[in-house]
Length: 522
Image (cartoon, rainbow, N blue to C red):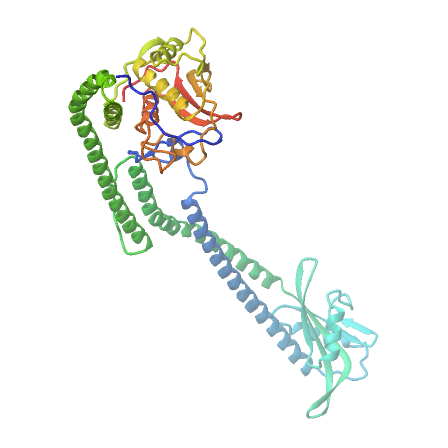
């Protein structure tokens, strides 16, 4: 009995060529992180970001504390010196008597006497009365006294003060107008205004020392804050690192991986959730493996059990076929129907046994060096596909290490599938193609038909087992395993197969096999 060439239903339409995705559960899983990425130092990793955030908080805290301390200390130092000088100058002015109108004779002596009583630092005392100007120093007019201070002194009989920096030197300038009482509750300015100018160099030195102390205290604080930052980052990163290692271990197929749960914080909750999820995943995978093993064993056992009775049935149907011409029409039709259905059942059993060998990884590749063009011609001749329905473009001289039997199944399934579900003529092309630098040369075999093509919805499932484009068609001439077996045979050769549609119309299947691969059994 001749084995049918193709057994897979597929719909038609137009769709660009796509690569099929292998379906089903695949273990062990491969880790998503490559070795180079695992060894690469993460400059901006979680540890760095945690340390940076911790140091930023420490720096802001230290800077804020230092700034507030400096401001309060500076204010206290300046206020103390300022209040002492203003109070002392006011008292001395009030205790000093002046005769009106003020005359220049003897005024400088009075001003020097006031200057000798200065505190907390020496003063230079100036007097202004109309156009009269005098001082306890060498210059009768001060360059430090501002117009704003003069205006404030005229407006406030209790006087005013101002801090001025001139040529980098800080000064305290005090304006104190002299008044006389007109009544117990009112005073009248005399027109004489006394000014005291005091250097605040000592206070500035103290303030600078405070600033340096605040700065020098903040920098060691940041260095000290680095230690708890490292400890905090370690306490956070240790569970994360364990989680990463556990995920990588699971990706390698060790589904019994668990994480130690420490404490009762959010990271501990994450570890518990991970352990619960991995436990559920392990149970689910175990159940899937057991179900897959049972299904594989069932298909294999059923196929083996059916082979013996089918062999007897095939022998009987062959005898009945020979005698069918001598029977009446109804009986002959029934005999031929039984013979055809028995043949289909035999094909299905053979396909199931072949698939079970692939699933059990018992399929072997018996590679030999063959002339590829001659092998394809033999496949077409053995199935009587030498008429105009099949065209070939087979250059001679291409030799490769292939399993002749399995390569024959690949070509027969693809050509038979194209003739059954596509349209003639079917073209078989053979060529070689250089891959990327360092990769082997590819042996490419294309089978293209002239039909309407593969429907877009069907294309992703074209290599699925028992898949049929039309769900309403529960019966077809094939077993629905032809293209699935073709895919497994190509993978056994270390190659790939792609299904798609040609721009000009029609489906095309391309088989790519490394030309110089030795081949390994499955």
